[in-house]
Amino acid sequence: MKVTIAGAGIGGLTLALMLHERGVEVDLYEAVSEIRPLGVGINLLPHASQQLCRLGLEEALAERAIETSTLAYFNKFGQEIWREARGRAAGYDHPQFSIHRGELQLCLLAKVKERLGPQRVHEGHAFTGFEQSADRVAARFTRRADGRTVEVLSDVLVGADGIHSAVRRVLYPQGDQPRFSGRMLWRAVTEAAPYMDGRSMFMAGHQDQKFVAYPISEPLRREGRARINWIAELRVPQGELPGTDWNRVVDKSVFAAPFQSWRWDWIDIPALIDGAEAIYEFPLVDRDPLPRWTFGRVTLLGDAAHPMYPIGSNGSAQAILDARYLCDCLADEPDTPYALREYEAERLPRTTGIVLRNRMNGPEQVMQMAEARAPQGFRHIEDVIPRDTLEAISLRYKRLAGFDKDSLKARG
Image (cartoon, rainbow, N blue to C red; front, top):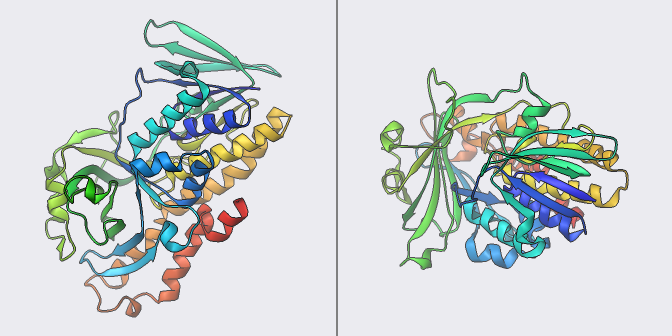
């Protein structure tokens, strides 16, 4: 079997490593001419790190990431709503890693070139279309270096080319526009003194004004200072979805004023904003779930299949779980079109549930509940939201996303 993957992001690279491990021939085609460490921080929850550890990547990840110990939610006054242990600190067999997205991508890319060979990664090749017969699919790419069309024959074509997927656009040329939430995100990394235990992720505020932060480096690396990834989020009245650049650098003056009073005894949010070298603006968008991903020998994976709000730290995780299930289906089922349909039947409804739950704020709904019930703050959260309600919200989302302990043990 030979598989062509369009897109060398986290999902595509992970799929390539998994397929190679099962003896499947793989080639990756990436539109950019040079893969560089772009982006900011992401979280790899235990269901994602479990799969990467199975690929023998735990040591490489541990060198670049930090093991998250705690997740805590606060209201806009810095009062604690909910706190829970994460990763190994919560008794999982695998860690929760916080890592720079670009460092993770380059780590995966290095392993792909090492194990598959550098000739299997074709940078500067933009997907333009495909044709298929009963037993083959011919994918077409435009080579950026000279504008020539390159045709690649294989048994399967996987579109793993992100939220702006060219493969998805061919499959759904009409009526598949991004769905804008009316909220904007500003993301950056700041070198600062660690807060809490130096390994904690926190979220504060509510859906119309929120701040999220977590460290992505050990505090001892630079004289007791850590690289802290943060995201500020605001609702923008009469806001419109940007037409082109979804990753532009902006000045803090665009959004910082509403956060000026968010200084508490354990964190200084205005100082974090002030200390950023570069701040990137993103619209909070997803797309409506698709009725199907698979067309004959062509299918979608990751953000190309199910772009979702970055709530619950599940975007990259679900791409990695897609890759595991797709790999197992292709390796175990001799009828390739049937294997692709089996993959879709398993993964499409699961990810659809997460997309829809994230529109309802996922596990972060506890902050919205606190804002609605106690907009002026509270003395004890139990007076506002019963503890068993908070526990139930946390567990429900873990089960939906597949990282409750029972699901992980069953997955082995």
